[in-house]
Amino acid sequence: MTRLLPEDFIPEKLNIEIAEVFPNCTRVFYLPTQAELNFLGKENETPDQNKKLIIEFNGQDGYVALYPIFTLLTHPKYLQQKYEGIQCITLLLDVRQAPYDKEEVVETLSSLPKGFIQDIRFGVGLVKDYRFIISAVEEQTPYSEMVIGNEETGNSQNGYFYLNWKDFDEMRRTCDRLTRRARLAAQLSKSTAVYNQLAYRLGNQQKPLPVSTDAISKMLQIKITDTDKHAAMKLVVEDRSTIKQTDPITLTKLKNDIELVSLELLISAFEKLLATQTKEDTWQRLFNENPFILSLAFGYPAVKISDQASVGGKKLSGDSDKITDYLIKNGVTNNLALIEIKKPSSALLNKSAYRGSVYCASTELTGSLTQVLDQCYQLQKNIALIKDNNKIFDIESYAVNCILVIGMMPSDDDKKKSFEMFRRNSKNVHIITFDELLFKLKQLHDFLIER
Image 1 (spheres, rainbow, N blue to C red):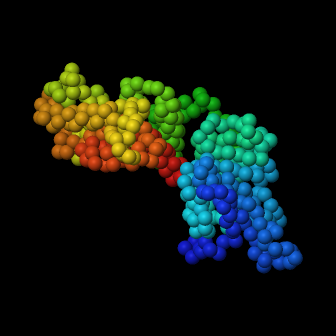
Image 2: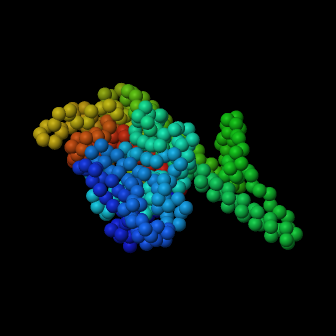
Image 3: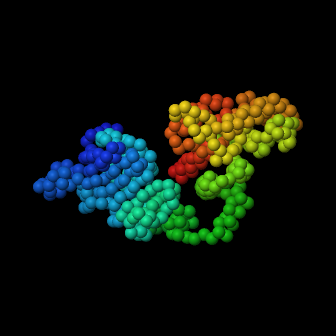
């Protein structure tokens, strides 16, 4: 776990020195105090003679280079490099301004991605639980530098190993899962071992090690074939009432694991679709197969009424030209909502600026917005007929919510600002991009992992 800075922590007391390499690029050196050198029997040496480079911040080229060393005074390798082979870990990040004082160094480190030490007093590099990532790289590559960025994982011709951020996160999450399982397995084993020691003294029957427990079986590397997995799933489905009565904890755990695996597959499918040119109906199929994404978009319990619903005619399945991709309702209030799905490749803004750093909304965005508003108008005008003709009376059109899923968030700051201002002033239609929806899915995944 990353250590959190205590409230009484004062950055100015850090044993570091900051030097500018060139504008917007600084290096941070760790210096032991003279008292520490005296403790180590190095009375004749000065802190400057023992200072070590630990971080380089480059706002111009957008990276943070970490040089992990041991900073614990009592460690036998104090001030020596932390890893056997990897001497530098370069993180390709959007560092706009390199820090120039100790407080700025602390603040910049606190924004490092999950998995990296953020308290400079404990050195830099990966949190201890993830040291196996470094070990795997060291065992399989000859390099002394590892770069983490958005390119494909592999050996670089430039003399370093390149690790993709997604691959890094997947490895980190794997370590987290195995750590939790190992702790649970240890708790169960200790509990049984202690119980049996006392039972032996008292002449009571001893307990067997619960190897059927999920955590124990995984620690013992018990293999389960795909056929067995399908059989187990079938058993759960066919006999769910019995399981619910006899072992609700196991059922809940199994349900959570199934949800997690399903979500991981969904995220993978979502990412693959984003990486290719896809039509609107491809995305509509993904939403049809995974309707809970609609609840994520809304932030309230959504129940799908229909996809490709006609809101301008008498029947929802009619042939009106006023077709919305999804008609859903709030599961609590029955209030209706419309969702229109476009493509990730849909342009959000015009290519050239209107004036200065201001960009106008594209015709595709404004046209889609008007389309959704017209569908809303038609729905409210025809709601009485729709309820009566479709025999659906538990729907209401008090204040129809409209959602438009379109495009990808611009990377340029000026365009991002222009888009944000436009959509925040579009009070009747909630606009969300595909990458924002993917981010919501990943947030949900992380929540399920950590609970």
